[in-house]
Length: 278
Image 1 (cartoon, one colour):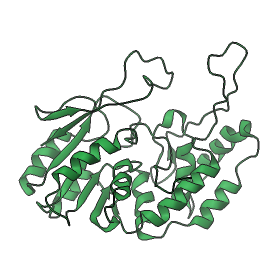
Image 2 (image 1 turned 135 degrees about the vertical axis):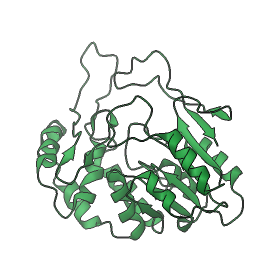
Image 3 (image 1 turned 60 degrees about the vertical axis):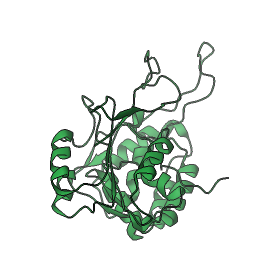
Image 4 (image 1 turned 180 degrees about the horizontal axis):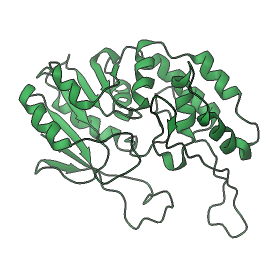
């Protein structure tokens, strides 16, 4: 089995299917061999993972996310993620997959203790539709989980739908590889506008993956065009932004493979993904 790093789990808006295309453009725009790469609103970190899989040193990557992903990647980068606690959470999952939803719903309702960071990928991997779950300082928000589903005699789909994607075994394998491969990245859990208060070298490459316009279910949002304006006041570095629509005339439509999408799978057209360069 490949030891290349992968995103921990399914995540609404994740860029794993188009990460290679995006990283091609980031590397092409890189001004030099020691350029820093900023991955802002990094989420499940498909872009940072692809950069490191391509040979970029983790120390050259700065990530940012205001949601629980920010806590997760900060702990991975600093080496403080507790694999023993993570293993204990996985070991407590029910043997019967039909009991997963009730078990995870009960876990998410409990006060978040010292191992909230280790709990997060387990909850997120079980989120219905990959929608973002986050901790608001008091409790887990948007915690809605999948049922185990088996096909009936008339079902079009013939294989079961598991309540956790990936499986607990695969999730553990991925996280273990990330603990080693992503150590050394810098990740900040903070509002994206705050990063403009520190110098962003002109020799860096900056990528932003904001929550899609008119999409609900994220822990936060912001005015992306205001960010672009403020960014240009402090840095001349190449800036790339992902969106479902082109944001300027220098936008490239990416090839988004796979099924048409949507939680129900009945969306008539594939989701569009545009990479706009400023």
